[in-house]
Image (tube, rainbow, N blue to C red; front, top):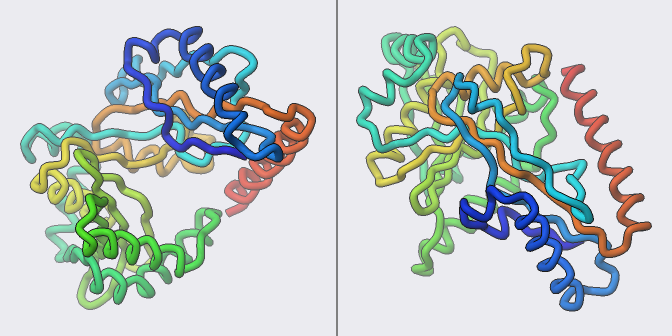
Length: 299
């Protein structure tokens, strides 16, 4: 399969026209076919356009219209289709005022109780990674999340460091940890590229959860991103709606508690180069998605 992550990027005026987007992507897919191996049975576009609205507003529930045939919605999406974007242009007081009162309270509680936030980059991030990964394994077991091996996250940090040492324009990666009286309670990995900082991975243990380290971790990363010139902070993935029955509804409450806008991406759309093979693959992806949902419900 051929996969195009976050692309192609379309101007807003075109993205609003479903027929125009459908025709353009179909034309691109047909043009690409001759440049791809004959064994390629599908082309998947993972699009960034969509709809957005302030957290809690009616507009935030509006989803993008589906594209036209021959494009088909992908049963499985690599990138999160829904996220929360926080505008970092306001000052810190305004950002705090835009949060849910419970989120503000938890940030202040963690600070008052002596939770300390540490930022690690480069070699320091690699040294603390095993400790973070143990918490991440606990998180995955608790929430029914499939994890990569520790080496995956190590390569991520090493590759970013190598690109920076070579003088290339590259993202900046930070591993934050929350500690209290010598105990590591939680940690997050944040990547900044251009004007956007993205919260990629989060880990937390059962120890001293009542100290609310996760909210303070995010607030520290948000402040750093703003002070270093980022314009947006992307929480990178929420459930599709405010649905208490959803197994990840707690994630919705946590991330939307910081305010901002909910963004519904247009998502992943497939063009079948070999329909018979694609239909088999599509069936397998649907099965994979159902199994993953069952795993999360049982967690």
